[in-house]
Amino acid sequence: MTKPKREVVVVTGASKGVGRAIAERFARDQADVALLARGRVGLDGAARAVERLGGRALALPTDVADYDAVDAAASAVEEAFGPIEIWVNDAMTTVFAFFDDIDPDEYRRATEVTYLGTVWGTHAALKRMLPRNRGTIVQVGSAMAYRGIPLQSPYCGAKHAIKGFWESVRTELKHRDANIHMPMVQLPGLNTPQFDHCRSKLPRKPMPVPPIYQPELAAQAVHYAAHHRHRRQLYVGAPTVYTILGERLAPWLGDWYMAKTGVDSQLTPQHIEPPRPGNLFQPIDTDPGAHGDFDQQAHHHSPVLWLSRHRATLATLAATAAALAAATVHR
Image (tube, rainbow, N blue to C red; front, side, top):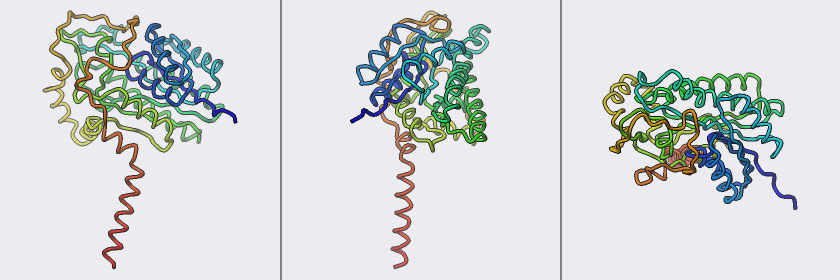
């Protein structure tokens, strides 16, 4: 009996945080997982985790802001594992600071990694998927693709740009009737190491906006979106939903609320000596895994994600209940 073919998956930003959780989730399917990130120690840790969970790992030190490096990594994946079936764009970095405290080279670098890294990853994937007319590219987004918040202008700007880029490319693929699936997953504040390893110019350690969720929920959403071609977007966490709805219904209210609460809600009581260089230009070569320092506060479950994943079943149950109610009334 022949063994089933392993799925070939590429994850950018795979050494830590959400990317690490995503790589580990696909490893549980015994997938071939290519890991793209800059730090060798984190990549090696991610590779060991993938192998331990039953997948095969290929660690490729890559700066996603460099298109040639991303394209070369894609070629190395296909040479080692075969055709790429799923590409996940997750790599990010940022500067936690008020906008006027961010130097132009810092802002450019954060944008090149977070936004152009997604663009280059999508380009490298489509270059290989379009001739075969099959494949999936998952864009890892954020509620901040809809609603900007203080202290995170590079990240919010990049996520807004990714959303616009994604919408444009999706329509092009649909126009060409291409068999390429491209969903986007919108995330809430997550308990990841970015709050330790991103550059900060603030006097207190940054943190995710509460309520905080564990990165494994993001990984579940990405895995689900990659395998359900009818899904355009998937939301994780109630804050993502009410942030997006609030921005559509009353953006002025979001301005007021974020001006009042957005700064303090992102700062812990822990004092740090600014500026903290972080990983903006050079990787911090450690292996913290998927989780940050907020395990005690982080939620392990998201009813919103559960509802989003099971909405077809719920719709069927609702229709059945309505039909039974109507039948009862007409007896």
